[in-house]
Length: 306
Image (tube, rainbow, N blue to C red; front, side, top):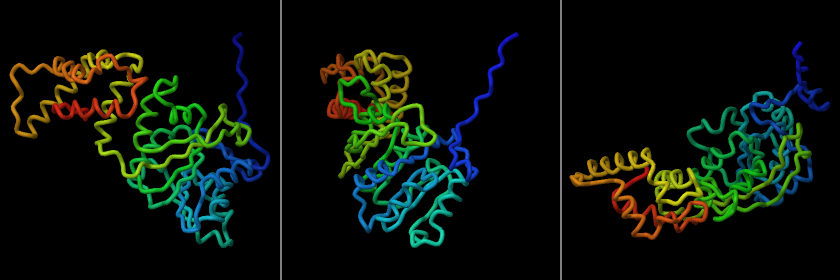
């Protein structure tokens, strides 16, 4: 007879079990429990008494109450109604209650983020990448101190030539200064995650780079699809050439320009790359300036990526 695997029981910590809360894996719930780590994050955030702080995924409020001690106001975004109830219970009847605003729901589905000066969050791993870009495209804040899985954090700070350097690295660094602040072991959470974590500081670049981010993202998407290939090879794919050809024809139509009868998108792309001596460049070693030159050359020729 085939062996029947015993059902794995979720690990429930005693103090949490008393409250009747079982952490939801779908929400990536790993509550930061070590007060020393929380204090260190708060100190490194340099919270001012006039700051409005945004916290994403406050959980049971271990970090929230520490932020409330220093900030003017905390806006906490929480998707789990059970955690909202615990958080409300924690500040009820205290001076902190009037300083806390709770937004219930998925922060990624909110069309716009509220006004805030500072963001501090132990980020659920499923929303790491979309949250980073939602914050950076929102722009109007001083700094974000975010806890991520270790490898994701390393990708954010990776430099050209690094093994983990990728589209996430260059897109983030275009919009913000990124620094690794501290490492956090998995035993500092309950329940403990399977991987180690790190805290990263993001400071939006001010003024922002003078480019269309959608265009930039389209270019880096093509280049990093196979980051070890040359740009010449990356731009030879039929799907890429077809998309660029359609975009060029749309650009001509919108600007009342005639498409040359002998126009060939493949030849045009090769001509642009050759003019920059960029045919043999590879995405894994290209920096922001390299990509800006390539983007400017393509856009100047009427070829767009979005």
